[in-house]
Length: 403
Image 1 (cartoon, rainbow, N blue to C red):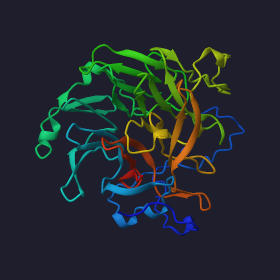
Image 2: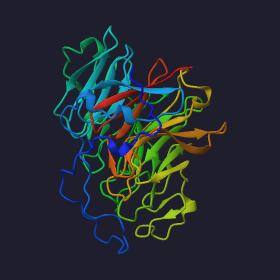
Image 3: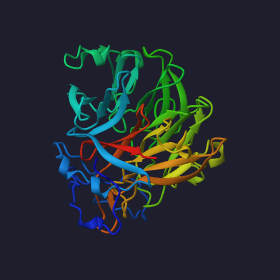
């Protein structure tokens, strides 16, 4: 296996610059943005590569993890790979956004992997989850179920259309979904706000919601969470936790992305009025931030905190047990760049976050203000290793620990 620890003295700037130039037209701030906005208004989102990145171009040698850990390539050649789930037989299913595909990755006897495209032509099929032997795929306002999927990877049956039952809004702005199966057998997802920041129906947008697997029984789990693209239940308390992406076009340091702990269904976490004690200068509407549930932790400004999982394996040292791994995809309009890494939110015995520590770094070159990868999701495998999906280069890395 290739070691992924960064050797002492390695100069990150010497690595090839693999990040693409923006493909979209420059984004403009919304009408009424503060006059003292310092964020670069000439930036546009950094589009992920839509072609296969050869293995030798992956930035494996640059990646850094704590002592005792190592990083290898689990699978590559999957443009736009994002959120992951695992089937009962060990198949890793992964959604995408821009490229509209769903991948299935299986292990070969020699330790390599095989990747199949099991669905394509969908509109941002970001969210994937397994319910028994059935794969659920959520694509903007569509929900599809692929029955007995692992037995049919080479001849995928037509999916069962469940869209009408779920009744999700069709908006594409922040419309991509995360999907997870809760310990109560319900499916949990997000409904992002259809704007950067605006007035909206707070019973319809900026929500975490759950459903029975057939789409019935809709329940609002949390309001006022602008755009969550990652959530998981605590393995002991069963509380729902979620990441959240803050609004743009205030300044480089506000608001911060955040981590939320949902203790009771229906809690209000404050968007667009507040993020913790930070009151939005345009949209606070005179509200007192103490009215709302405060974040469990702040994760940094504009870091694009996405997929998160509690560590439930036994491979890693004991201090990682039931701690939260979070993929921070990285900023698109902040100077300097922030994110582009995987961090660990450390919890005490009462479930309070005591700190957020770096875990997998090396994708971001601070000196050159460039990046070579964008971690978007993490997944704990049954053997206790940790998978990390890199949307930018279409690869999944595997982090292991040797005692």
